[in-house]
Image 1 (cartoon, rainbow, N blue to C red):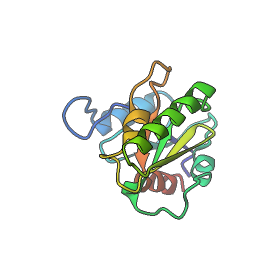
Image 2: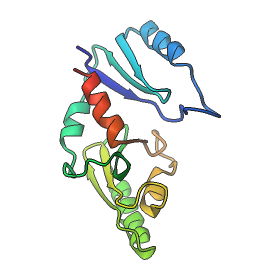
Image 3: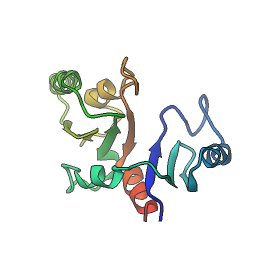
Length: 157
């Protein structure tokens, strides 16, 4: 059974930042990880490692379980807990979303900011602001849609 999910930012399906998944699996194996499986060409990885993992708990804390459309629910994963500064950024992003007539919403739970985007990701001021890189060590985190979040949970077994 796989015990961890790794979400790598900046690995794209095409264009800049592509990384062959076979190379990624090999590199992780060389660092002591086992049972390494990648999901699509995007830096989504399930693996076994002796370090701790809280991915399934984060997924279970989804504040929008009724939202099943993959394009309407996204999770912004952070390297650490959402800080007070992050919360202020979320409030400002929500205000900008409302000012533009958007219906999006966001809730921070632990290390994840959940975004409910009824109008989709592409038109959301909220998503644009929260997905922007920051000066934080994790550059603001990495975002995945509901379908990917669920698939990675399944890969954990």
